[in-house]
View 1 (tube, helix red, strand yellow):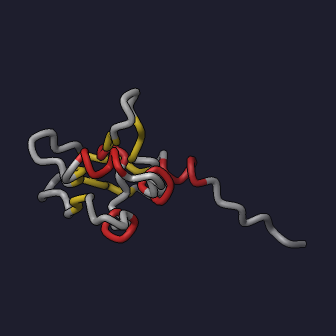
View 2: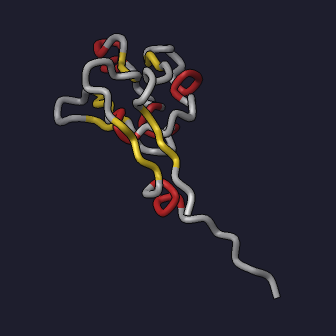
Length: 98
């Protein structure tokens, strides 16, 4: 008998806690005008946590509080218009197992 190994990503993401650093966000869009010119908006698709969204005016909103710190931001934007760094000590992702 084969066991079903399907992973529910939403279930896994719900086990991750993120300590927010409101003063120094570790993730941001460098130039919003450049994003407005981007046709493909790859950032809306490459992030496994869905950190990037569009607002009503077509601007990219960064919900860095949901970030998993996977680093896909560094390679996902062809214009390199996303600034990503590890959060300063005590902030960021806290993974819990069990």
